[in-house]
Image 1 (cartoon, rainbow, N blue to C red):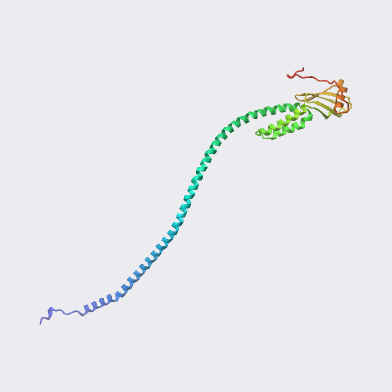
Image 2 (image 1 turned 90 degrees about the vertical axis):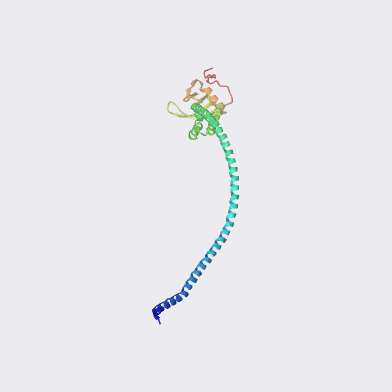
Length: 267
């Protein structure tokens, strides 16, 4: 028999083969378990993702409704703002027209203000000239008017005009009446005597001492009133003042005086 054609089986190889087969068979349960865990983990992640997607969808639906309401409110506000803007634009146009008119009016008022300001300046200068010629009887009141003019606002034309009108009214009232005053007068011997002064408006005045010893004629001038002694008319001036004071019955008295024409000269 030719037994060499069929080699003998190697027992060592059989053992190695059996060991490998056993190892593979032993690994199969572990591989199956790992696949299951991975599948389970993937499933849980998928479920979590689906839950998050559902939550986000629900949240978005709620937000969508809120946004829709907000859009409606904003659209209504836009309509209201548009209407208000149109109204305000109309008011702006109206105010612009009024401003243009006011500008023209202001320019006219400024011209008038300059005109009346110049007139008031001239009137104040005249007032100062008249004030210098007024008697002591009006001095305090006219000085107060001057102080008010100095302390007041030059731009307050109405206020300045009222002060001047009141002052000139006082002067005019005095000029139209006969007024008596009593003032201290120093004599040549140093005695100071209270004398009676009878003003005939702003034209002239007559004065006499209480004893009837000295009489004066007073005339207005640029620097005030001048006193001129009239010894020859003491009796007449004293009688005139007594009549005014109702200490004598009315009588005709001849006193010194001059009549001035409109040009300022003697008539």
